[in-house]
Image (cartoon, rainbow over all chains, first blue to last red):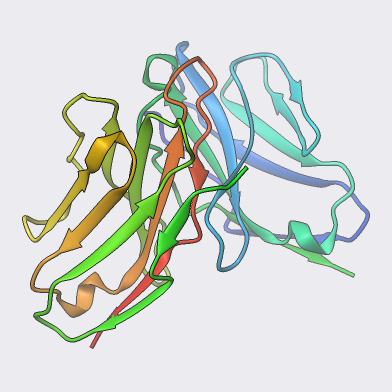
Length: 112
Length: 115
C-alpha cells in the first residue's frame, strides 16, 4: 500500500475550519484515500474516503488534488470535540475488506 | 444499534501468564480485525477474519499470539506467556465485508498491562 505523510500536529481555533493535509505521492490509480480519527481513549472512527473526486459528508470534506498525490481533510467548523489524532490511509480498491495500515497521523488540537 | 464491544476493558496480569481478550462485533458483520496500540506507537494490525476464509495472520508478532472466531461472530485473542512488551491497548473492529465502502467500526479496546 502507498505510504502517507502527515504533519505530526496542528492547532485550530474553535469555530474555524481545520485543514489537515496528507501527502501520498506514490498512490496508484486503484487506491482510495481514507480518513479516520481517534479521540483520546477511544477506538478509531471512520470519517470519509475518496478516489479522485472531492467528497463531502456530515462530518467533513475531502479535497483530492488532480494528480492525486495529496489530499486535504476539512472540518468546516471545528469544535473542542474534534480534538483527536487524524489518520490518512491509502488502500487498494480491491482490498476493501482488508487491514488498515495506520501511520503516525496528525494530532489536531482545537482551542477555545 | 449496538457497536463493537470488548471485554475486559482493563486487564492487569503477571509476566508469563496467559490472557484472553474478547470481541463482540456488530451483528451481521462478516469481517473482524484485531489491532494493537502500544504507548506512543501507532495502530498495528494483528489479524483479520473474513467469513469462512482462512484468517490473515500476517500481523501477529509471535507464535504466542493466536485468535479464533467462533460461529462467525465472537472472537477471542489469546496471548500466551505474556511479556512486558505485550502491554498495549488491543482494539477490535468489524465491517460488513461487502461493497466498495468498507469502513471499519472499532470497539473501545482492552488495555493490557503486563507486570
